[in-house]
Amino acid sequence: MDFNNLTAIIDFAISQERESADFYRRVGDKEAREGTKDLFFRFAEEEDRHRRLLEDLKGGGGGGVLDEYRFTWIVDIKRSNYVAEIDYHPGMSYREILMLAAQREEKALALYNLLLAKAEDEGARKVFKMLCQEEAKHKLALEGTLDAYMAEMGD
Image: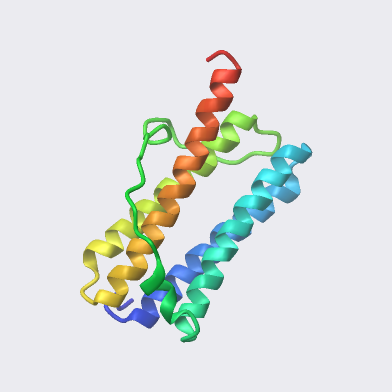
């Protein structure tokens, strides 16, 4: 794939966001607990929002999106970075689900950071930088939720 071609980059990012949304919907459908089901469906909606943003950008309708996007530094508390990889299974604990989702966001962040470093076109750099920030925000929110939950449980 030509990661210096902005259209190819956006197509790749769209496919990644679609896969993530599909994953979250698939596991949400398998969950029996309503709160857990809802959590996965919210994750799917976020990934769908990213996909639509990228599709708008590709179609020319979102040209101002990157110009207006506010880049800020997102702290990484690295809670999920030092835990063995978790595979999904129905009936997972809430803690495991949060960790799994944080690990997925970490992988997406790592991928977009790698592509950001390889991009030679300014438009491509902006797209990947935006995606990095969005994935970092998700990861931080998930890890913060995990920390709060663990504190609630006395851990």
